[in-house]
Image 1 (cartoon, one colour):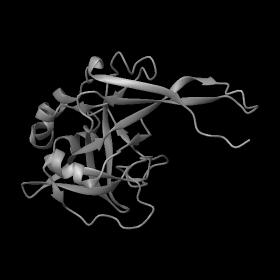
Image 2 (image 1 turned 180 degrees about the vertical axis):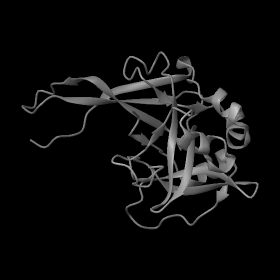
Image 3 (image 1 turned 90 degrees about the vertical axis):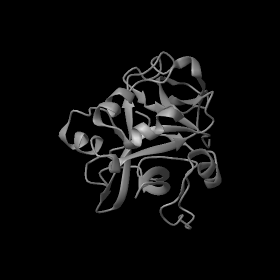
Length: 209
């Protein structure tokens, strides 16, 4: 479920879009690639600290390697460990994206003599070139880690991934997500309208013969 996403923008885009300054130093190593987000990789997140909104950089695993698999997505907010994060505004964040991907249900024969494989379907938001996904974060032994919050799939995503989709927020709801009550968080955990999104694909990796 959405273990592939992108932010095709520059930090300046985030400053302008979210009205946020830096909460941490921007990574300067060449392994930091926010344009291609995968589990355990680092990404920009927006959160509030001391009453000010800012940009942080965290790993995409809210448990920081504390489980067998990276914990990249959270859905059941009734579970104690997620309720603890959901009810605390200081543990909420926004994850800026330009696209997220889901794999096709079926495999495709690419006619290259190699085994069939699933393609990537890339989803974006037509009225928000840079959109925000609801998220939670916490400090771990491996550093700060975050997860995206998921919800029911809408009519566009469901044919590809019927179980769930990421929770995309309207800009008017950003402050509510970051500062509102637990009931507000639960209310905002809902699918974004399908008619305000687009999809492209399937996209396949280039395979060397």
